[in-house]
Amino acid sequence: MSDVTTTGESVMLGHGFYGHHSQPQRAAAGLGASWLAAAASAVPLPETPAPVVVADHGCAGGANEMGPVAAALDALRARSSTLPVEVVHTDLPTNDFGPLFRLLQSPDGYPAGRPGVYPSVVGRTLYGPLLPDRRLHLGWCAITLHWLSAMPIVVPEGVYSNLLPEGPERDALRTQAARDWHTYLTERARELVDGGELVVVAGLTGADGLSGAEGLFRMVGNQLAASVADGTLRPAEAERIFYPTWNRTLEEWTAPLAACGFDEVDRAESAADDAATYGGTDDGARFADAYTPFVRAVTEPAFFRWLDDDRTTAGREAVTTAFYAGLHARIAADAPAAACRWRVVTLRLRRRPRGPDDA
Image (cartoon, rainbow, N blue to C red):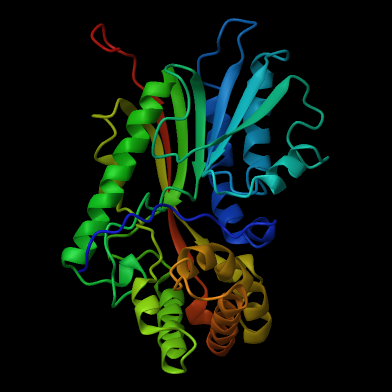
């Protein structure tokens, strides 16, 4: 285990690429859309003309946000047809918000046909403050909270946390994930009104220690090693590359809830099968054509920010192009092993009423 790094969160690939190639995230988020509508039917509403405030944590380009937010809006409007609604989308300041803005102005955006809806954006990490105290009524976060706010260490001999053996490296990642989740809950508890709710859809590690993506990341690790062997990638660069995520166990998800001010309304465990999402794996080449862009959308910024500073733009593009071409070939050769079957937990959480000593 090497020294602590200060590198923070990674964004998704921009210019609409992530939104176009994020079908697995959309499928997983779809598991929670009805829960979000149920929460919208239960949260306390402000007295008019004050708006109800809905927050979408981790919006990326917005492609996967339109349906769930629309479901929440319709549930709120079923309670009050003239209710003004603010929808606050959040993501990192380095996120490409352009596709989100274009979607919000299009017929596919949730504001279409729903007057009195006011979208806005906050460019900040969700592992920190986003809104003033007691401003938020309903929060939504889907397939985002597995990302770590920072890589606390360099892991030279691994690329994915669920493939690491127990030891100091895995302990450091677990500790970072626990700190991030506690921060997220504490800030949302501050922002939520009493009785306000959060709906979270997130990656899960099962009792067997698996997340469902191990086969894919074994291929990723093998391709990184091949890139070093053929001279495309420098050894020191490869040692720094790691997928900066942690899929919490059910106990890790639920342990801090009460201390952070939340009651658990409901929970469910499920799985999102990428083979089904992409129409099966019988034709490996066809599957690889569709699946490699998804993998690239979520890994390229996280992986290749670690290339040495002396590389030119053309040189960086050559490295990434060669890596994903090699990964495509590996996926095509063994598509069933590459297709993730993501384990997912959906949590519906309610902000407990504050006591007389609460701020």
